[in-house]
Amino acid sequence: MVEPWLIDAAMAYNRQSFEQKDGYVGLILLPLEHLETVLNWSFQSLPDEILVGFDPNQNLAHNPDIHDAFIGNDHREQLHQGEGLVLGEPHLVNRGDSFSVHHIPEEWVDDIFAQERGGRGSRFTHWLHTHPNAVAIPSGADADAAQWTSGVDMILGIQFSPSGPLPWFDEVDGVRRPLQPEEAAQRADDVDYSGRRGWARVRKAREERQIIGRASTGHRIHGLELIAFHRTGVGINVVLVDKEGNPIGWNEIKEI
Ligand SMILES: [Zn+2]
Figure 1: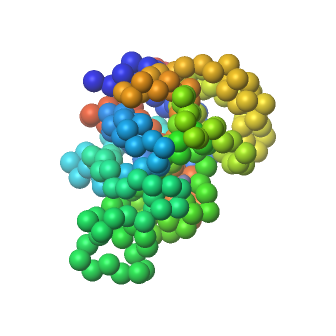
Figure 2: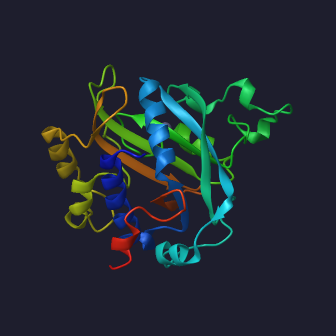
């Protein structure tokens, strides 16, 4: 059972994924229950970042109606592995700082570890790593690690308190995707002509310290951001789905 606050956040996130679909060249469907699992692992692993691997669920293809509804004008076929299949079970592969997290432990590497397969040994099709109390924007190390990803790379930014040794870090430029009902409702005036979000409003929201949910560890969650990208640097749209691959809030979105 996914927590109600996370379902609300996912509905708002999906609405934004639908309205901004023309900004993306690819589409992945991520079951919300898997995102909740990743969130729990993330809080249990603080202050480390975690690295999570996914393979596609070979038994769950994108429903064609949903696929067509969420792809944009610039959608490209045959961009990455695992296209058209809902993501399968998450696997917690590693934890560490923002550099070491990408270098996976030996037990996850096949017998033949070739240098050209990168620090992660190409073990999974898709990867997600977390940014505890930092925005979901790829660092240089993230972009490097993604060069060997055959599917897509995801980053989950989590703003929480008490923050321990990790104060919120937002001095990074880029396009961000909040998983947060209030911010999604403000999306129109939040995004400037270049698609970038205005920092003033982010800072204001942070100062208000709203709580969108509570982690299993008792941490207060103030914000979540989730982005996905392909190793070539292009953005991949993410839609959060239920067990059957239907978007959370689909009944409302298809009326838009
Ligand atoms: Zn990172």
